[in-house]
Figure (cartoon, protein in one colour):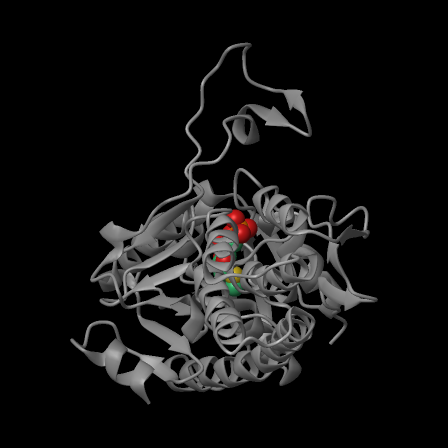
Length: 350
Ligand code: MRU
């Protein structure tokens, strides 16, 4: 598979592939401070729940390097600043809070800040490496499920937003299933939602699929009912930014619309996400903070106003898909049927 990491650590600096410029321009931005890391996450230089999490680890390492005195209080403040950069993807707080535990331990045992810095960098490297292994496990579970549910033949997929190596560091979650299915010659075609307004589907998923030589067509979200009504899609795979204890799932805006249409036409709908995307501290999706992004992402195209002057827009970046619309949730610990009470917590404990 032709992929590369959108996150590179080299010579004590972080380099992020600027995903805002894809697919036309492939350049990496050099990041050397916590605030540059935060801005890169806010501006979506780097995006996708797992990659936001990995990037934040390096951001915390850069912050530690810049400090003359570390205390538990200033570590917590820096971690909270990082967590506030994007509110919906729980992977961010998951990784930053793990960094905080490491930092706290170093401060309490009076170890050197320079060692903490190196430790955090290694921690970042390890999480990216492990994510590849986890994504492969999920991909295999997804393919096994399709063999059972649809049968051993070439499959037609549909997906929303971007969940490949650009979002996950390697292979991908939902797109990882498609990529793995392609490696064993089981992909007929993929319908890619363009994913308004930021066009992650058109710009990023299409870029990843074309790099892998997987046949695809870009479709507008409004076409979902038409496209699913003709029974030509075997299954829909999407990622997740936060999954509540009952399986309600926050993902890119438009995901829940697709799930509702899929239920109507009885097309299986799967969520694929690592354990770091689960938030079992909240009972259901109503507790998820939905990021509202700038109106100009809707009223402008490439910095050109396309709406009448003074038009207002509403730009929620995510929505919540009700658990009863989801056929299955796949994580590295196994397959979760959200219709079975307690199943999610049981699988996460494995
Ligand atoms: O706003 P983005 O591009 O960060 O949103 C990304 C998504 O919604 C993805 O589908 C989600 O993070 C899952 S990534 C494996």
